[in-house]
Image (tube, rainbow, N blue to C red):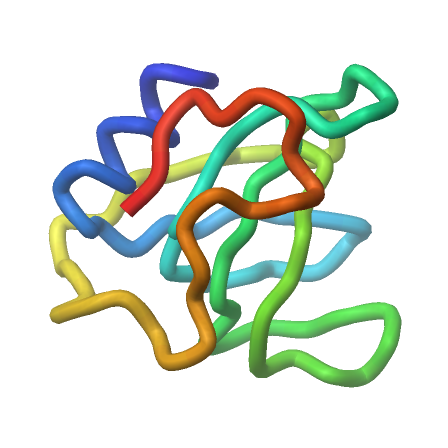
Length: 97
């Protein structure tokens, strides 16, 4: 999964996947390992559902909970406002915008 997510980040491809039972459409910005040793992805969700009911905005996804990951052919034009490289949640960053 690391190579798929990093390829999407490098090329600014939109990702789709199922997470916590909801289909999601996201713009991936950073992928790394958090302080608990879990792989996580920081992304901006543009479509889909969410347990919180907030289906639009910045999210941190545990990659172990991602199912049916697909890299889409369409891209996003630039990092979203509010994106900060060097995500402090991540102790090790595999790839980022």
